[in-house]
Length: 135
Image (cartoon, rainbow, N blue to C red; front, top):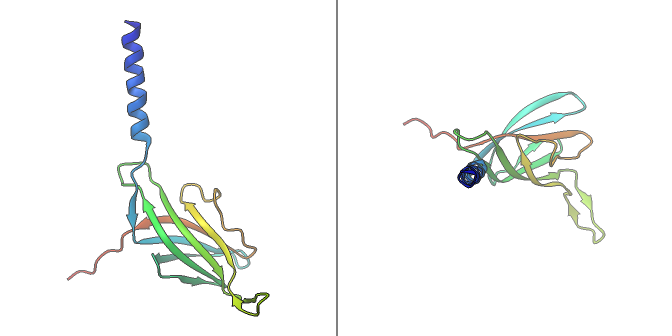
């Protein structure tokens, strides 16, 4: 009897572990929240994959965005690259826009991988697919 209970418990643990793995769906658009720390104003930015947007002196580029389906625990994950629009000369005399952030951001854990900038904060709210216009 004990071995049956242990087998059942092991089976439930395996099943629970399989259900705990989220199913990610790739989306084309994200909503980001951007904060200007100087003025205290926050702005929601809708950004499409591959179409960078400007916020203050930053350019935010969404490379990919994933969302879990509604029947699972809500989570959004986006890979962002953020560049400063303040051009800086290099040693060779070229002008470059320094990258201030490149990495994954998670909506449920904004502090896990955060943009470290003295003036601005940017974090992910959600990933979504844009609605098609009504015909």
